[in-house]
Image (tube, rainbow, N blue to C red; front, side):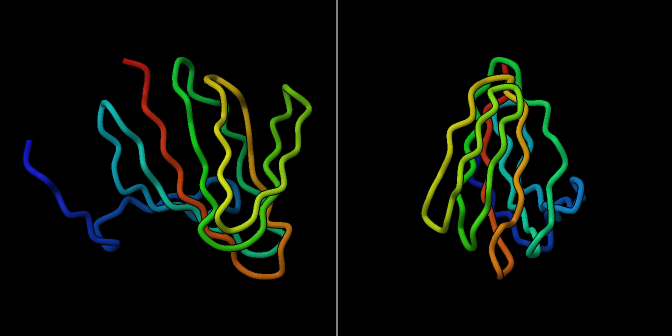
Length: 110
């Protein structure tokens, strides 16, 4: 497979609750996206990815990550990341005063 450059205007835009997400890659081996939340906005509950770890890296802003089944809240700021266990439901809320940007990566179960 050759390297592939993916430009921002080539992404697949979707809304996940109030979160605007651009999907850069969704192959059989990797999902990678960038999400954006305005202050006070909440993402849709993601049911988790069975058999796959997922990571969220905060590029910009201040978010609260809620894992309701574990009754856990994690406060994250720019430069922080959270590794979400396989199949664990989660959602994020922008608790800051500026737009938050997050990078998401997941390796789907093979």
